[in-house]
Length: 58
Image (cartoon, rainbow, N blue to C red; front, side):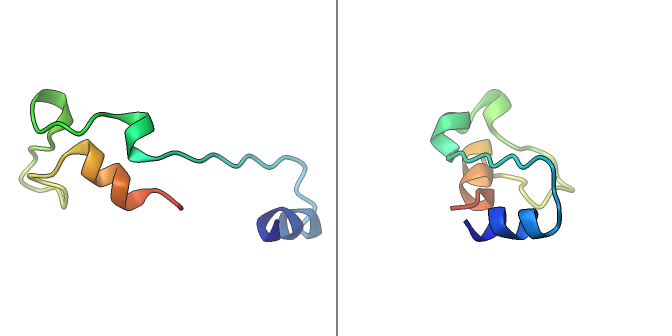
């Protein structure tokens, strides 16, 4: 509600709130497209599931 109230006070015309969990976006697997294999990435050696699990807003 605090976000909605702040948006109202800022005269926002549209507000979209979207939630997710890692399980609703991807599966927890370490192969193929589910693994991050980029040596210059902070996520190298991790999975997409691990990335989404850390990045979501509870």
